[in-house]
Each structure stands twice: as structure tokens, then as C-alpha cells.
Amino acid sequence: MTVFDVVVVGAGPSGAMAAFEAAKTGLRVAILDKEKLPRYKVCGGGLVYRGRTMLPFDLSPVIEREFYTVDVAFAGSSHRFQSSRPEPVISMVMRDEFDHYLVAQAKKHGVVVMEENTLKGVEIAHILTLTTDKTVLKSKYVIAADGVLSPTAKMVGWQDDRHLIPALEYEVRVKEEDFHRLSKSVRFDVDVIPYGYGWCFPKRGHLSLGVATVKKRKVNLRAHYQEYLQYLGIHEVIQEESHGYQIPLTPRSGPLAQNSVFLTGDAAGLADPLTAEGISNALYSGILAGEAIRENFDRPDEAMNAYQAALSHQLLPELKTAQFAADLFYHQKRLRNLLLDKYGQAGGEMLVDIFTGKRRYPVRFKDKVFQYVKNLVGEKLW
Image 1: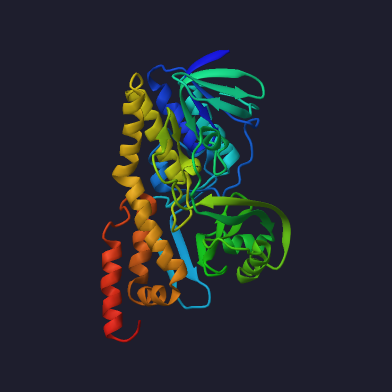
Image 2 (image 1 turned 90 degrees about the vertical axis):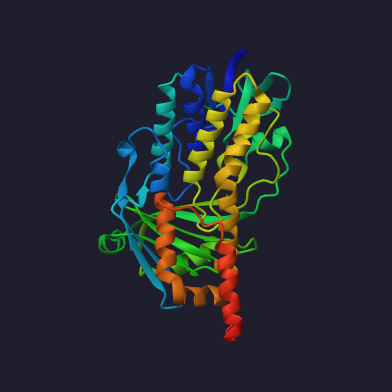
């Protein structure tokens, strides 16, 4: 039996950064992962600049492309907005390389990585007992960073009331002329799928394409993906590899730390409800969890309270604003299009500022929308 101070379940961005932070002052930290690293991870692989600046080390070894311009278009309308910045708004990564690189940084602080260990059970007590298919571990703290399905959260007894949406992502190789045409900028194409959008992320020599819908319903994502190819003007695919997955667009209700177990990233449900971007919030929540444990190691209640307070200070309120914006954006198209007529470019600039970390979601966004709706009612446009 091996004893650790902290065991992190999951070697993704939130898990790696939680381990990195927890181990800074010499705590004995382990990362468990059921796969052999590096492993492919289903994800568009777009790292916004806000997430990149959170990290205290250089990411250039795993950056495939950097994009300083973002294009947002709305299918079936003339609305199209382009925003540029002097810094890379979105950097492209392949998640197998990116995640493995983050884990390597954690190992520099002495973190032990236990690959091909599938967690089978967690026993709650003063000291937690974790049973895998290969060994038994003891730990004072556990950080669940094991993704949207999070077996750890289920074992510990968390109820799952998150709103999960379906997405389909493809790694696609196309003809040289198509790649050259589509590789100049990152693009989001809203309404190419009902209640959702498609994305085109150019990587090094291929495209990451995908479609997602925020409305939980039966949907033929494959058919919408084929339509998106035609929308992009791609009539011949040389090679493609598809991956379906789910994205949590709302956090779990209640505390995200209990019984000395902390939920981070998708396990907690911290993806952006408007854009479905999850890497930056995964990094952020992992950092907060590791810090809370490191700074309150001998006081578990204070550690859990510190983590919840840190999330509640900024991230969780912003997710509520983003959820309101998403409901308007995807479910109230008439009102959304009226807002785009008047504020479209300004909205695009604000979103890119959020991507780069220069701005946060406005806390009074709902009030401003309601005031505009009142004006529309007066003009009999509502």
C-alpha cells in the first residue's frame, strides 16, 4: 500500500495543474490515469490566450498554430464578424501532446504518475483509500479530474445535475487548396446546426472540424457534420477520424468539494456555456484546487471552503452570465439577430477580449438585455 498526501485522478489539464500546484511545497502527490500516456483526447484543441497566460511555463513546444484573428459567421444571414488582437487569441494544440507536456511539468515537482491504473473504488474516512485495478493507495486528499463522466464523482456520491450536450469532432485531411483556403483563421459558424455551431480549427497539416448543439435532444450529428463540410466548401475528404463526446455546460449544484474530495474541470461542469470552451476553466480550477490544498493542508475543512470560495469569487458567477447569454444566443434567435444588428461587432470584440483575458463576462449583462427588450417592445419589434 502506497501513501500520498494528494492523489489526482485524471491526467488532463485540470489534473496536471492541480498536481503541479499541490506539489510545489513538497507534498507527496500522485496522478492516476487509466490510459498509458500520452493518449489521444477528444477535443477541438483550441487554447484561448486567457488559459495560456495562467501557466507559469512556456508552451511553445506543444503549440501547433497561433491565430490572432477569429471569424464568427451566422448561417442563413449576413451577420459576419472578425476580430483581431496582437496576441494569439487561440493557440492550437493536440491534446495528447499538450496534456503530456503539462504532466511532465508536474513531474518536475516530484509528482508520481501512475499510468494504466483504473480507479475502482474510494473509501471515505479520515484518510481516503483508493482501490485501482492494480493497487491500493492512501491519501489525505483526492482531486477528481477525470472528465465529464467522472467515475470518481459517482463513487464519492455526487449527484449529477449538469446539462450535458453532444458534440462530434473530426481530425480531417483535405485537398491542399482547401486546407490553404481554410487555414488562415479560426472560425465559428453559428446555426449550421440547430441550437449550436460548427468550428474549423486549422492544425499543422490538417483541420479539426466539429459540430455541437446546446439543446439536449436526439440529433444526427453526423448528418450535420456532412452539411458543415458542404458549407465550408469541402467536397473531398482525404482522411478523417471521428470522435463523439459530451460537454457539461452547467456546474454541479452544491459544493464542489466534500469529504476531502475536490471536483475540477469537466468533472465539476465548468465549461463555458456560451462557447463550450473548457480547457481554460479546467486549468483554472485545477490550479485553485491545488493551491487550496497546499495552503490549508492540515485543515481539510478550510481547504474545501477555500476552493469553493475561490470558484464563487469569479468563475461561478461568470458561468451564470454566460448561461444567460447562451440561452439568448441559441434559443432566442429573433432577439439575438436584432441585438447583432446593433451590437454585433462590439459583441464579437467583447468575446475576443474574454478569450484573451482582458475582460470578464459582464455581471449586469442581463439588465442591459432587458432594457433593450423594453425598447424593442416600444417599437413593436418584440
